[in-house]
Image (spheres, rainbow, N blue to C red):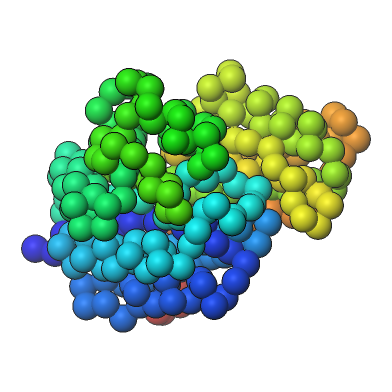
Length: 294
């Protein structure tokens, strides 16, 4: 019986191919691991990698991945629009096939321990792997960023789960098990960062907005702004519903949506839901989609 986990490590480089490619190469053509996607964003200065693999092979590949990032990325010289606290910023383990969330929690904790013992990289455990309720939310852990983290981890409530000090060039990484999420960004035809932040505040769940939506407003180098979202349960809020909510809030301010993008992968059911909602289709299902395999 094959057990498969999805892992979506994010690392803090999205501009220099000479840095990005050697890091991604560590997880390319690894037996038992499949590289599905690697999406780099220059404004965020971040690359999101999507892997699927058997637990043992995946963890071995991830160790090489982090080792390469440690050698090539120095956060003391890093800038970008996306919050970050580590050269590899987050490593989520997502149960896919014949494996439970509890097993992924165990695997994530064991990997975090190995990472510290092998490479000296400290970590926070987050989401389902968190050791306390206030440490579950990634945004709570990452608040203050790399620059403020050395001071933050001296506080008893934010000490690393593994390690005691911030690595001087790498920082600290969040590791944990979580459900599948969709990373979805909506760019506005505006340079008004305050507007993007107000819209993010309106649409995100923690401030009374859409369920299962996390959002922040960021400025892009092209002179526009973006509402950057994580949709943690597309059955509760679809991609289309999130897009529509941002569009409606922007239009209240006389601003239009310039474009949108999905970072990484999206489940076919989520595509079908948004497609049917946008076109107001009745009774649409994935069985009506012509497969590329015939």
